[in-house]
Length: 101
Image 1: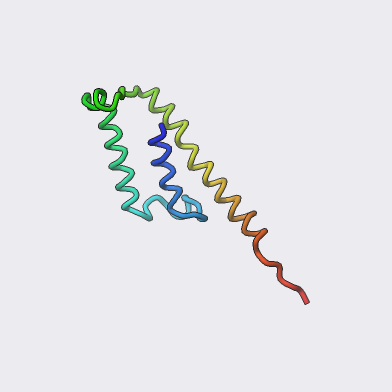
Image 2: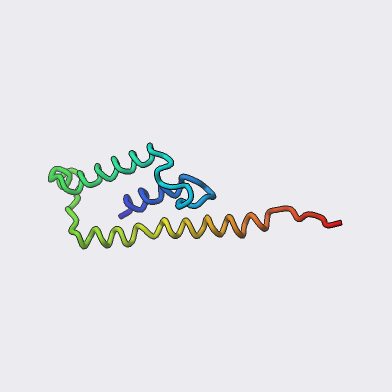
């Protein structure tokens, strides 16, 4: 589950301030390729029998994957809320006020 959370969270790092939905996940093809290859390696460790022996893993059922996804995907929403708050509230407090003459 932590691996999937980190893979989702890597997309959040495309921009410190802008929303992932405005930047898009295809803005950095290297990140997309790295996440995809990381997921493939993760699946290999889980489903190739030697991975069970070497890493002490077990294959996951479809129900397990649904639960992993449901607990991992919200990281995108959480970080989007934090970015929204920072863009709209934190920067507004830090902007100097203009004098009106």
